[in-house]
Figure 1 (cartoon, rainbow, N blue to C red):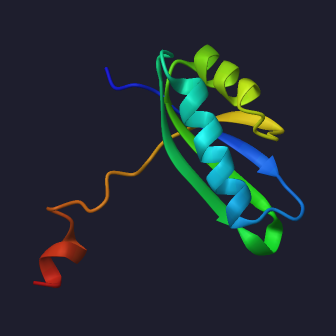
Figure 2 (figure 1 turned 90 degrees about the vertical axis):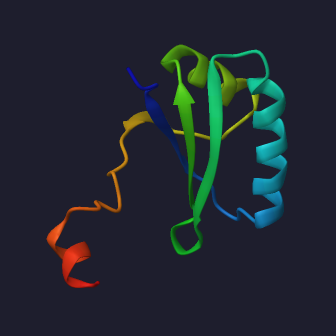
Length: 95
């Protein structure tokens, strides 16, 4: 069974790229030794929203997010589509 994925959803007024670099450093430091992989973040500048993606244990994700001072409102279960699908009609027609 694959590890579960989670997203921390953050409304972060005034967030800058330097804030995200510092956040990455904090998360990596606090994730060491935890059953969690930090997969990075996504910044929506216009909305001042940051999504941080994790893979692993739900409780550990919450612990790491709190210890790393991620300013999240909630933690959501996430899923990724299996892109690209090699046998999809759009893939076949483009070759």
